[in-house]
Picture 1: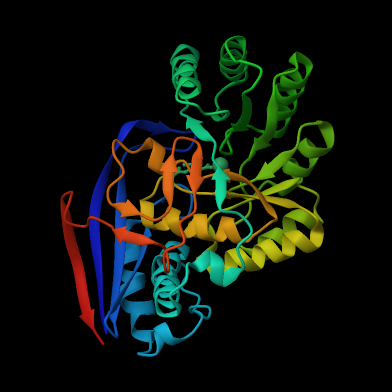
Picture 2: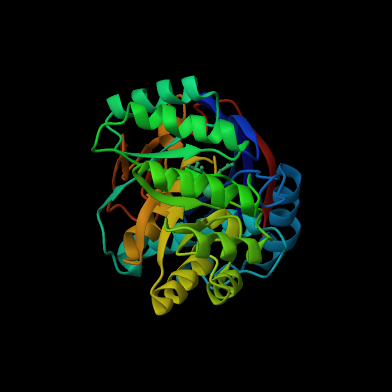
Length: 362
Ligand SMILES: C[C@H](N)C(=O)N[C@@H](CCC(=O)O)C(=O)O
Ligand SMILES: [Mg+2]
């Protein structure tokens, strides 16, 4: 069995800007696991501002804490949970490759092995946090490109965020709705003022995402009680323990699940079952990350009826999607492919500059 970690950079059409960080190009770490004549792939990206995971941390954790625990029989079974490492991105990176191998051995897509519910997903697209004028231009472009759900990044000061929404809503056709993501940028009094004002103006807002700092659960509950729009928890929920805490405290109406936050598909599926029990719907989201991880997220989303919202717009934000996949990304539409595993036809590792960080033979 041979494991390698490859680093490549995927250029973006425009810098991706939130209240937390700006990304100029995606650092894509690709894990390649070769065994029994099959190759499984996984990927993850550094998101230090969100998960604390840097390239070095992901690489070292995968190499020294996870890879040595892999057994030669990895592709003969449904992946079981990997050891806790304190680096969710590394767990996600390796676990995705194990699922890809499992699907390849079974000759089925991961979604179909998990019990497929959807073969089509409808993603929103992110409008980065910029001046109101720039955001209007980007929103118009997205609408021209056929998107009907815009994820508007805010989280600046009250006046600027009011102005952003006012300017965008002035040009919105009736058919378009908004998801507003503050990425932890407000405090409770500011969030309540802004959200109430958005409500008073009757903007077509589907939800407000992570208004407050991740740890301010009391504040999140206070905001949720004070406003009518649904509140979605993103950075406040990494894993199933957080799902229980956030729901018990009444902090959110919707949960944004991301494989990079929770450590991979197994934990994401567990979170979905908890949400289902609690009657709370979920979004399947992504980081600014490479296509392999987003394919894994598509497979989870396609198998879980409790996932009713999709934020898997990474491939739409790249300058060009590297590789060929059975799952097709066509504007806001994602058509889930039926090919085995993740459905990677060619992940084009050679196509753009890349560097092998390490190779280990077990
Ligand atoms: C890319 C996706 N639309 C998104 O906005 N994801 C995150 C931020 C990802 C990042 O900073 O890499 C989110 O906050 O929802
Ligand atoms: Mg978010």
